[in-house]
Length: 296
Ligand SMILES: *[C@@H]1O[C@H](CO)[C@@H](O)[C@H](O)[C@H]1NC(C)=O
Image 1 (cartoon, protein in one colour):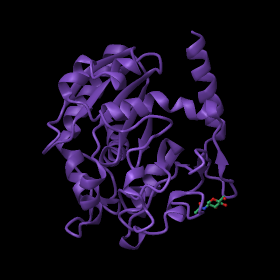
Image 2 (cartoon, protein in one colour; image 1 turned 60 degrees about the horizontal axis):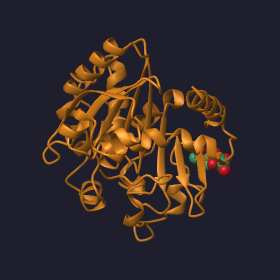
Image 3 (cartoon, protein in one colour; image 1 turned 90 degrees about the horizontal axis):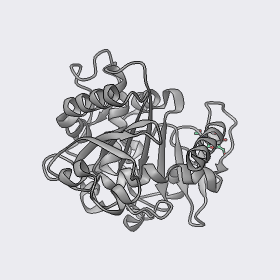
Image 4 (cartoon, helix red, strand yellow; image 1 turned 30 degrees about the vertical axis):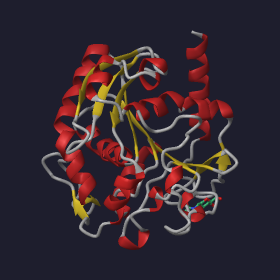
């Protein structure tokens, strides 16, 4: 109970400190209590790299039962090759359904975000009914999200009805972060009466300005970037890509700074700090994020 109270208290103070849409918001550092709120979600994102058999049994080791022993798995899928791994389940301590997507290491994400074969395209109106065709996303991320969207939706609905929680949290790292961000637009179109939040790590740019604006509604997205990680500055803004609000940038000092606005160019935030692809470091992509490295 003490732990639950501490988490709730930390969440409440985080909500107060979270960036609002007000124009003159400063860049502020998170307290250690606010940073620690993210820890269970970081482990859920890391567990996205583990095989479906091990996330369904919740025996993947430190990232599974070691970090989040009260998790109830509901469904897992993907083959880690043509289709990224994913899992869905419930954390009753945090009071949320968890949807986690596998990421990729920097050798596989870099071709995806630098390859000119990919383009900005509209979302499939069958999966995204009513979403304006002016909202465009990276075609590779869009096609990957579409592969597992119906299975994940069914699993989230089943988890919500079985456990009676009222919140859905999407997590992921790298490519998994991009898939989680598209899920954050997709799932609310099909599920009502619950709240959604998205906590992702090493997020590349996923869509255009209209997509970033849409994903920023309600400030439900937090994307945490580690030091000089190059992935979050790709694909480039000159190609029409834009980040939503909610960046938290881990400085070289280890401070976690909350960056107001979309794609903030201050040199305390990733876009300003990692000026170009040559200044970026692929070695910072996997973390650590408050001690958590993004791999199984
Ligand atoms: C970036 O952050 C600064 C605070 O230092 C803020 O004044 C500015 O409006 C932000 N930029 C954007 C694009 O939101």
